[in-house]
Amino acid sequence: GAGVSQSPSNKVTEKGKDVELRCDPISGHTALYWYRQSLGQGLEFLIYFQGNSAPDKSGLPSDRFSAERTGGSVSTLTIQRTQQEDSAVYLCASSLPWGADYGYTFGSGTRLTVV
Amino acid sequence: DQQVKQNSPSLSVQEGRISILNCDYTNSMFDYFLWYKKYPAEGPTFLISISSIKDKNEDGRFTVFLNKSAKHLSLHIVPSQPGDSAVYFCAASGTGNQFYFGTGTSLTVIP
Image 1 (tube, rainbow over the protein chains, first blue to last red):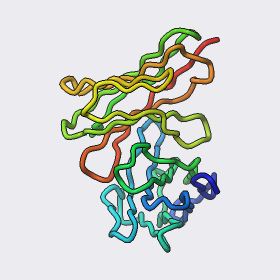
Image 2: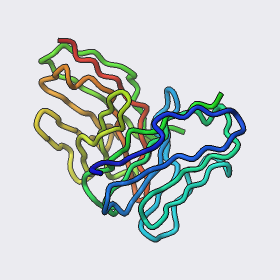
Image 3: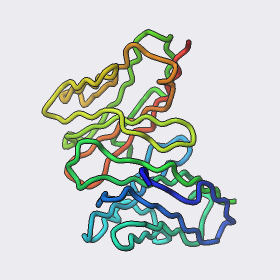
């Protein structure tokens, strides 16, 4: 597709369950980012993938969060043992390699609600 | 600690007038800045950027101004249109792999 695709668009889960969020970046974009936006907060960086390099995981808030990027394309963000404070909109973005002038292209996000 | 701050959560402007959205940052190493626009239920879309070697960048109705000494940037929209009503995020980056985003300003342009 032409844009960044995220699924599901909405996810309601019970506290303690694991969830997987999927991101399909724009073809040819080697960089992929996960951000989240909690209510009333700015966009919070989570993790960054660039090509075959080791990902920058410095933004992951706890070891319950992990992400993979298979084949340099699709990425999955996994949250284990979800907590209510994990409720947020999770946004994926992709871009050309660092240094491109046009920033990221974001997906529409996954709204996660932990009840 | 919020490194990029947008202190006005909301702004209302009459159609045709100028909208000025402000953003402050704390890290003097930031050298690249972006503005994004976000409509409800959509991801943010890139609007305009500026690097620290410039103090102004213009694209149609949108102009971004950067004041490095004050660690301040602003987005001017003139003339404002109802379709500009959205949440605007500023973002800043230094040498790392990530952008730091502000909390956003919700702009309402009144017809």
